[in-house]
Length: 229
Image 1 (cartoon, rainbow, N blue to C red):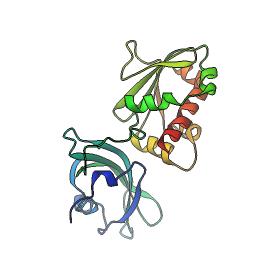
Image 2: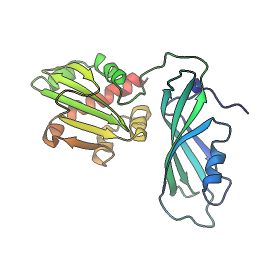
Image 3: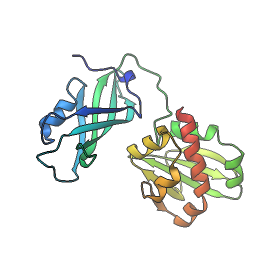
Image 4: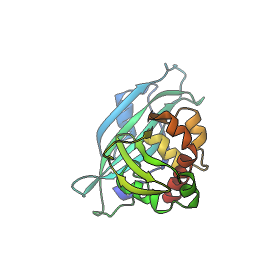
């Protein structure tokens, strides 16, 4: 069976697949991805010990879709969670597969979290609420997803520059995993504040300025959801 094409994947896609083995080992992992391209990267974590009575299934969520450099293929990253019949997580991790593409693009940027193109898309639709909330602010907001980070240079109510790295760095950086950004942007409700309070986002830099701009970050999260539609 030939692998699916890159264009058939989208960030936020979710699948549940049975795990044939009693325990989730390398053979079981290979079975999950049979016929789905070349496995290029894998990170894995054992969360809790299994039981002989466990009936396991794997939940897969697409968290990244990125064109390969040759433009003839695409890289699809998925978060995996292996759980038993009681919903208890036994193992989790991320896997990336290389799949063929039908064409060279172009591709949408709405789910390329942490990139300059995504940051530019966010700033295009910021309205009066953002302008009022940052009317007296002069600084740089960093947004990070996995290894990607974009800086929004803000001056008195508007974003004056979107760049990969501001010359003086970010005033603070708001960072989260690919899974957290995916669930925030594609989920049924805007639950940024709940996720922030539960520690799904990490903040580095000036914590005081971060607290001052909580409303601004909530507006950026709402805008990210709008861009993704």
